Image: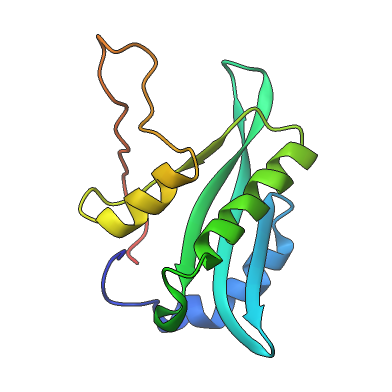
Length: 133
């Protein structure tokens, strides 16, 4: 659902080694026998409101043949368990607004839009590219 163009050749070549070097990376693979059928990539951050770490879910991917069979929910549960082990105050993630299937899966797992005060509305994710992707 992301950019729609897949990973660049540079990213494919360097991603695994870069993730291995990051102490903030936490990830898991779901398998059916020897076949990888799902993955979740997470990174620790910090909540200044709670003075505690948080865990951001950056990627959740389930093979098309396995969608709707609970793999995504198991990966989300893995992330929640990991966050609790790390003493995190919360989990965060982003989802594209038109990805209704993912939105339903996240809501089923207890996720909701980020809002501090209903009068202020939902928080929005913004970005600014520093390098071309």
